[in-house]
Image (cartoon, rainbow, N blue to C red):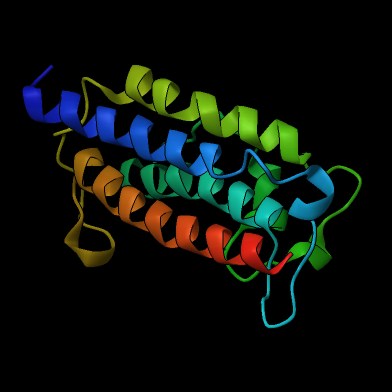
Length: 152
């Protein structure tokens, strides 16, 4: 694996751990609170982060990825916690999924990072480019989670 790719996966894992560490003082009950002025809660943001990485890879490579596709109805774009049901993954389940996701992505795609695909949004053509975009996206939701946690 190229040095750049090792660094990319290191960043993916490090930023994910920072997201998860920021939740150490947030209970499951607090993770379900939608503060005034917000559209979503912390649990929704976690599910959205998990889903987002797979959706972008799947969109690029045009292959089904083995993740729970039912997550779209709870955590997809345009959804919010009012879409949750008794089947929606728990806060703890989402944290565990997020913790394992970087290693799973690395295992599945480490040899395909530079494979060229037809361009999607912003001209992205490789999994490498998609992962850079999802790291940026995680930073946005990290800040949202941090802000929500100050209001609960």
